[in-house]
Length: 436
Ligand code: HAX
Image (cartoon, rainbow, N blue to C red; front, side, top):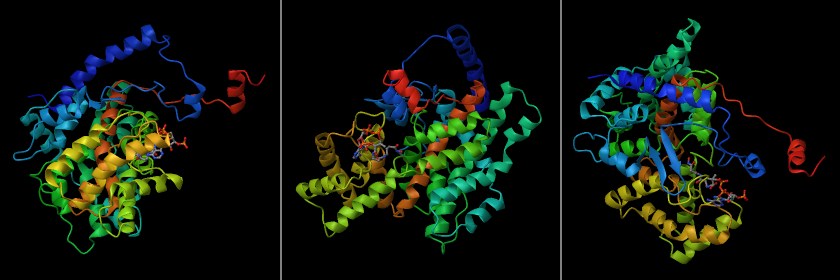
């Protein structure tokens, strides 16, 4: 049976001529125009990135390698007795486009287990952070600390051929992704449970199962982890975290630099931090309501008060999506099955009914529907992860799977350093004809 790396190499060989042909024969073909609104408005909708790993349709949501999320959950192999698939299977799917067999997944699992050893200095760096630090800052620094392990850097210095860059990048990426759950769980223990003995990994457990074990959580938290890492893995290339990872790697910075940078982008409240903002916001509603479930009218008033004070409703809206995020729906279905009576989930459900009509009436947000973050913190809270500062770390571990898969392919296809062009406001005014 060929290894994942061999299958990937085969796919790379098959793909390279497609990119070369597009560049050589159609390099001058114009595929889109750019408007002033797009240039001033955060580059929305400008088609300027290529990835085959995922595609985001505004009305359908994300597809991984052409498959919708429900299809991915259906077709990937699952550990015995689990409801959610192996994260290792998603890694295989994202890298190769192929659905792995059970034994191919087992191979990836063994490979990950063999790469889990973390140098002592990483723990020392984490331990040296003040306990008030944000876990995303610690995660970013811990990943950065590992940079000295980069194989790519060694091989680059030794004069490796450009055609082989993907190989050492694959080694670095696999080494890093295998370690991310261990680093995340260690940060959790350091910040929130310093008196408990840290559980190092269990070599017999898969990515999600091992994370639950290290977090000290029982089933079905293993399935929560698998679900969480899978739904957050990729959202095509233009979002802040994915784009940052790609951009930094385009300078041939190694995957440690690129992943640390993507973590920093994910830490913003308009992006990955929104899941903790949702929880903070709901707690605010709860407090105001004296811990009882508000009536629909009371909830509407709270939503309007938030909007009228100039704040956004966290967990709602999206730069690309124009309907309810399927990542929200996957989690909602899980919550309906496993925690339908959870108090916070009742709030989330009520918001699902109340917020979209209000955002429509408010008239600003182009997408009034919930995104992934509206639901995810509540599930973590239910299973005892109540420190909502930590939620974006879980997002980051998942997102690293997609970002790293993309960087391996960026190297394989020889994508150049990214360098869009900027203009001045004077130039824009000249271009539209209001200034000579
Ligand atoms: N509540 C109130 N107003 C909102 C809103 C919301 N949830 N979503 C958008 N708007 C407002 C914007 O602030 C903007 O107002 P201004 O014109 O005054 O600047 C206007 O509606 C138009 O925005 P848009 O084009 O619909 O949305 P953007 O592409 O600019 O922004 C965001 C997309 C996700 C950043 C935005 O919807 C938002 O701030 N949502 C709340 C935060 C959130 O949930 N973020 C997580 C998104 C998913 C994700 O990336 N996770 O990592």
